[in-house]
Amino acid sequence: MTTASARRNTTAPARTWWWGFVPFAALSVVHVAARLVEAEEVAAPTKLVLMPLLAAAAVWVFRRKTWTAPGILLLAALFFSWIGDGAGAFFPQAPELPIMLGAFGIAHLCYIWLLWKYAAPGPFPRWALVFPVWWVLMLVTLWPSLGGLAIAVALYGIVLGGTAATAARCNPVIAAGGVLFLASDTVLAFRIFMPEVMPGWTSALVMLTYCAGQGLIAAGFLRGRSPRDQ
Image 1 (tube, rainbow, N blue to C red):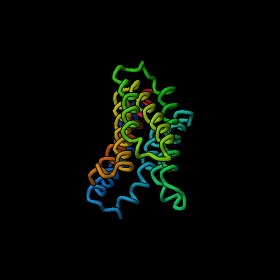
Image 2: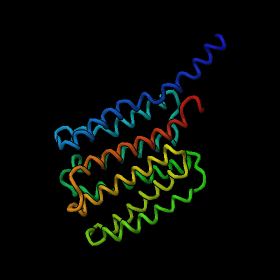
Image 3: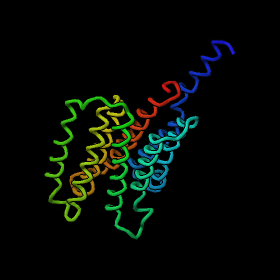
């Protein structure tokens, strides 16, 4: 084998690591567009395929590696996100919101563990101080509307903000993903608890920021684990 061919064999996987994200990105566009035009017959089923496609992108990157804790944690975060996405469909006889909060809460704990331990984070940037301020302001604003879910929402806000803060310590792609994920759930919280102040197009905004946030966290993490970097 020549030096040139050896170099091609080494760098080719690094150039193709992102291919696995193409189906997820394409379906995200379809889903958000369906939300925007209120085509529920398209939006409902496509929502349940988003996280499996993002998990498939992770499998694509890890396809030539031994599965260890980082890959398993990422898939766990995506799995519980999928359960949260489909809470109403998967558990039609149960109250949807508590299941959704619980599933996404576990997903955020997986993300915090993943990013804290395996994403080579640096120190917290000063701008991350915005996250505890966000948590306080959200609770003050929403508290009168939360009812019996007040404690659950407060706890969920801690892990949601924890994911965003932990992501802020990582590379800029992951950090952007954490902010977008937090933005998505912030808009969703107002849609659930203060729907009278939210216009209809914010349904599409929730999913746009959600898909972008999840995708950027996964891509930012997986890019650092592509074959070129091993």
